[in-house]
Length: 461
Image (cartoon, rainbow, N blue to C red; front, side):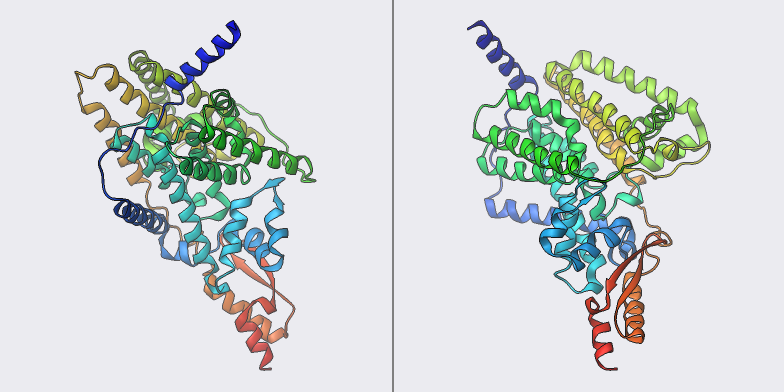
């Protein structure tokens, strides 16, 4: 009996500090008005993502693995084979689904289709964060800023934008919040569970959230909780089976002291100032700037957590170690520490995908500390602290907004590459053809019969 009482007390503490109920919906717009507003904001989020790298880079360029791995497989293989195929030793469900949907449109529109669909997945992840974070971050300005940073990450760099290959990193952050979320409806739980399962089946990085998922499983109260937990663990089991059965030989992991330097450059600096502002400060001020920033951030968290209450401390205890472990172990496992290290007086976004979730976890902890301090002293609601935090984050996001680079992403133009491939097919009378993609050096191979203009040209010969 004593053990049962202790378990129940533990669940009550988890309910209070880590898994609070989402607040009830107050008076607001009608359902149709809310749906229209949500749709408009999702559309705006998609457009803003496309604008970040310019219309050429987003709508007329197939980026990195999107072409030779995902679109090529979707065009040349059956749906079931393509969806169930691994890449780099694990399942990549969502990127393959995006490529499959892109094949419903003409091949000339593949670049635009992949970019728009990828941006839609990221926007949907931001929407999930808005709802799932409501139990911890009630302030709409803080929570809205967190959603903005989820959709328009200031640290990912060019490689992570409008690309099927990298949407799962944004989804991972949504999964973290979904595991903390206690939705008020079963529909919300089902939608959250589906997003969590899709993310796990696309990126095993979701396993860094196993401690949170285990605590959530221990704290299950009803079908809504069970739905989210079951979706996460069922998808994890499927991903694990796929990885154990894979013959992929990954890169040799590389541990180096550079990993801790990169952690400070990319996560500490990125959380405070984003890629552009933080990188510029590094280029001009070097390690003196980063050391002062790191000490200042540690001191700010120490003081803030001492005054912010149990919920903020519980969240920080989960989020901050997860951020550090996720970044350090991911960089180690992929052996990219030396490549990501910024040299003196220079910076770049290479490997930026590994920074996205850790930076957003640090920012989330800062927001909850700020809100916790206001909750602990409700009679002294000075607005300057949340306003200062929101202002800093908006400035960092704004400085890193533009990421256009048409020489890297946009060369060659996708429509031009398809036209040239069609001409080649027409001249050689069929067979296979190579189509170059972005960045220069990437290419994909398709049968000429998959190019409509080539098929037509060939039949007229």
